[in-house]
Amino acid sequence: MEIKLAETLGYCPGVKRALDTAFKLLARRSGDVFSHGELIHNPPTLELLARKGLKPWRGEGRGTVIIRAHGLPPGEIAALKALGLTVSDATCPRVRLVQTLAAEEAGRGRLVIIWGQADHPEVIGLLGHAGGRGRVIAGPKETEGLPRAEAVLLVAQTTQDQSLWSEVAEAVKARWPEALIKNTICEATVTRQNQVRDLVEKAEALVVVGGRTSGNTRRLADLGLAAGRRTFLAETGADLLPRDFQNLKSVAVAAGASTSNWQIAQVIQTLKAMARGHSRKFWPRLMRALVLSSIFAAFGLAALALGTGRLLGAEPPATIFSFFFFLTVALHLTRDLLQSRDQTLRLADPDRTAFFAKYRRSLVWCAAGGFALSILAGVLTAGASGGLMAPAFSGSGLNWLPLAGILAVLAHHYAPRPEKPALSRALAKPAILGLSWGAAMLWAARPGLEGLSATVRVAPGLALFAGGLIFAHIFILTIFNDILGVRGDRVFGRPTLPSSLSGPALRRFLYFFLAAWAFGLALAASGPVPPALAFLMFCTGPLYNLPLVRRLSPGPGRKHAADLDLPDYRLEALLFGQLPAAGLILWQWS
Image (cartoon, rainbow, N blue to C red; front, side):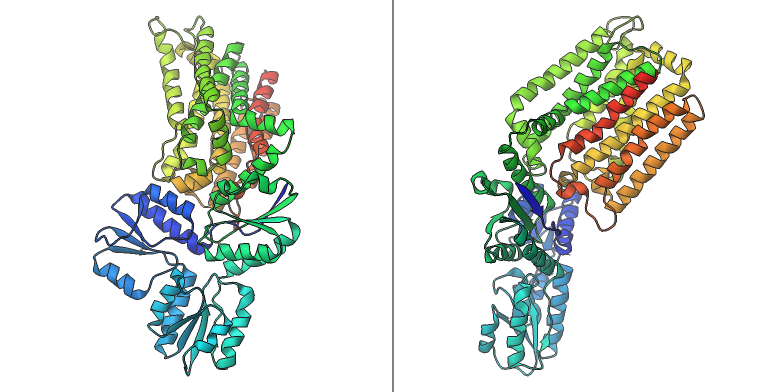
């Protein structure tokens, strides 16, 4: 089943502004935060906000009240301020322009005609700004029942159907030839409607993602029905039934202006899962299992550790590979198992959490077994220098304490810890992970303090080269993984670089990092590292990651690639593919 996406998806600027306002206020944790009515027409997003602490205002006289994106009548805003409340205005800028226009023209004596839904919050707010000179019509025929007026202004609820505007405007002009006609339908609404009209011609069915109470979302669904297509309105993937899509070859997906990217992605993932359920292809299923179980990542890290050890002339035993392989599996599975139990995180990546829910018991045993086998592999690696995991009571017992500290740091960062977004914390995460893995692999090359001292003493240049190489790979992989999880990070306030920086700023940062990486390899080639090896590391490092940066980090005017992408496990496998490639080259070269 082919899935065709509308070009414009995700929040419109006004909705995004309202949500950003709410999340920032909630992150401060400086008092109660209320919303005057529904902030936006999107129940799943409102549920998330409620979990983060946003409460409906019910007359409280303390805290901060956010004015919803649809706006409020000026009298209600004045009443909130009179109560001593802090008022944060999240009214959509486009709606505010219509409010200002209505207030100005009503002040000049014009009758303000509002084409829209009389009970819609935006229309109620516009009526308040018109100051008693406003009237609402649902269609052109209702112009006949309007009172007499010498001067008239016609505006529209910003989410109305553009195709019906000319008919309403003509009806008003027929009665008031000199009427001031202002088409105030939002461009974001018009764009989405036009795209749906084109999209339904290329698909057998239409799925519109968004809240059922959202006017602009319902109008998109109406366009699908008008075109004779099977149309489904879904707030989340749970609203879709597999039997409805069994015999379909193509499905179009569109979304309302108040629909979050994670909702859209969730619906798309659900559709892809349905298509996968009808498929008997073995390799895509195997790739998904290898990536989600972290076996692919574990193989890459273990290969890099083995290659690093041989580069440093240590001839590491095969148990070193086993140690890092099982340790990585255990750490990754523990992290993902913990996160998959969080109700809110299930919304960010339903396919991944569904995998862990289905195989939870087996994966718990795999994680426990991974820790046990990594300890066993460490014990088997013990040698004359004290070993990787020498017993604590032996004369060289202190040898394993630094490694234990490194592993504690790794576990600390792999465990989910929601915190307030902070750029310093976001940058520290990939940096500390890179340093920790680099230190662990250098330590494992010649276990023990004496072995590490020997490594640095015998080949200081190669040790610096190997440590820097490991750091660079882990650093950029951590950022790539954060990009893939940017939806959840932004919603739940986890501090990562993708959730803390704008798209263009993130891309510039990654380009700078790749350039610095390449410069470091050039310096290494002029020193202790053979130029050919440095060039091969350039191919598996900066050059390998350059197209991935372009793929995953957006340029100006684009969204994060992961914001709306389907779960592509081939891409995740490609990300970690740089590790075994680098490890194999180091092994063969040495």
